[in-house]
Length: 249
Image (cartoon, rainbow, N blue to C red; front, side, top):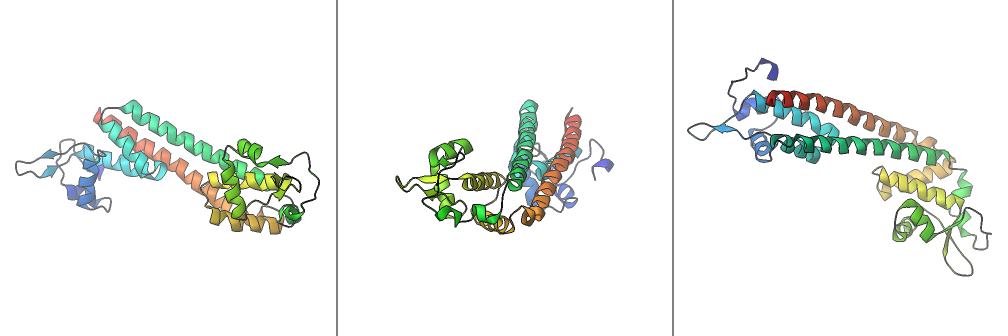
């Protein structure tokens, strides 16, 4: 639609809405949110838009898939307020978050590759109170510190059946052996990846029973695909935003 518009052409809300499957109320909402520049008004009070508004709408809709609705809104609002540096900072933060998510996925894959046979990490291994301590054993405080979480979070994971520390027979303290530490790290990485505890539990059970990461291969492929789609969406959004910035002059 935008390629056929002349710079001084006047558009109605329905003209903007029609090409994107939106309602005229959505267009008004976008204007009120600062996503679109303020519209001019006719003597009778009707909104009139221009090709600049059409490009702003295209930029916003292109930004949403890569940055999310809230961040895309903040980017457009900053641009329309003349705070381009602020908009670019928001974009940089989204790219940094995507990079962090990629690193999280890599960490999950490394954690999965480190998982041993089911017998080494199942609850039966954690039920031997007289087992000797090993060099990799951790108490709850130091392990929580390594992961950057609170001890209460580890206790919550234990109640959910995700991590199985044993109890020291003399003190009753939780002791996390190598397998429990490995499970805790895997849960931590999956949580960072956006998975809920109820989603993580069956994944870890499958991995333990299979003795390796094969049950999660489809999940990991989907995760890779979603990150790649976000990256490409960010490129598409950047192109439309650059066109809008040029149009604004």
